[in-house]
Image (cartoon, each protein chain N blue to C red):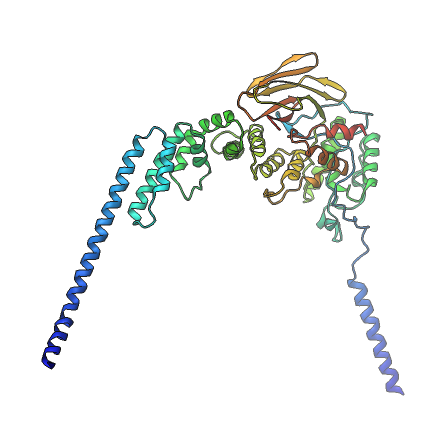
Length: 245
Length: 249
């Protein structure tokens, strides 16, 4: 009995490495099978999205379809496909795609940078034509940024102000702050102060806003009254009013 | 007793020596400090809005009563006033009237303006006042040259020159806008402008379309279609006014 037990134990002992190797082999085979399946899935999705009529919808489908547990190589393929579809949609003047191209961080998607120069006129044209509802706020803000920054097009602050104003009406939290900075850059402290007053709630003013310090008490009071009328976008005539006094 | 008196003598001499040293190193009396007028100044001003053209300085014509029109101005900070010797702080830093620094005087009118301004508040001193004067529209040529000369002197003296304050717009725009706009409505907008009691006909634009003139007004038409908002711009004499029209508010 004892030799039998020893023999059985020895057999089990010497089988363990082989068992482990078999298990490892089984696991590797399983991973390869899964990876291959994921790759096939990606390829099918890629083919389907490249044929899609609506590149923006295809982009949304791809971004929602990325599996959580995939290797970096495959994840990068999903990313590249999404970028390609977004750029395709932007070239087709899709407002959401244009917003994405012009608002994503340069570090996140450097591929958008060269496209911005190419599509800037399309952005401005589309922004002019949008109705101005809440969904258009970010597009309008992006159009204002392009015109005010003056890097992709010649700076046009007045036109930028029109986009910012519409973005403000559409509910943008940042538009009032942008307008305040814009009018300070135009050396118009009266209008800048009015937009400081309108920068409420989630809106945050840029540092160094000193429009109020450049105004007299009467001017400040006059502007505060006018700020409640959302139709008024600029302040004029204060110089004449002071002169008449 | 003798040692006591010599001890007292030494103490007295030490006290005198200390007093002399203190007197020697004490700072001289300074002019009255500005009382920190960092707030805005209640003066009439002409001026700033959005310019659609480079800034204009109209020559020769004074507005209103003929007096120089003052603009809003942030006075020199009290902390920069002279407690240091004149040569290090600049000749115009809080040291009396700008009129005192030159034997050549400007016109009587400008002298009056300067005296009035300098006495109107603690901050109206030095190059800040000079820069502000230079930005006025109705200085005579000789007065302008006088002001510029004083500024040039200050620059040579190494003084920091304050930038001129921004102008505020003196054009008053008036608008006739519908109280409420419904979707699909055709909207008529009228705009007019006045500067110095004189009517101006503004150049107005909505969605790239310019308006037409009717009497002293500019009239524009907007077909709302599916739009929810639009901005109207009107410009007159280099100043631009903007209004936001919204549908359904």
